[in-house]
Image (spheres, rainbow, N blue to C red):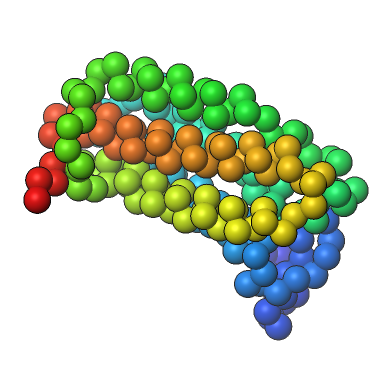
Length: 188
């Protein structure tokens, strides 16, 4: 199979459900942000200097959930293609909450804003967090025009992205801690 098809040379692409749309359509923009987020998240464990099996496993699961979310965003709601997708439930967001609680138990209370940075893995987590927030904003815009039958999975994807940005913030602090660095406080 060739990687190039020439099908997108005129600025259109095919959704998973078969429809041809412009590459800058709201749906393509939304799942494109998830793809970018997934790639940014892949940089986090690549920067680890100390083994963190729990975080590495969580990040792999997050990437899998983002692929499922991207699949949901790449179909026309209510299409027959959406029937083949696994439901995106609230369970992944709940797993993120447990991971946040686990990491926060070892972190000092936060009394100031912090600047993104520190260890390279923390910087990658902060960058991922900002991409996640953009993806969340894009999805909010996209959901304004969706029919009601799209609501359950899209709603849960939105919850997931909101929780994921929280997870990535705490992960950044965790990465600094395990690598022996202090968070950079912003004190105006």
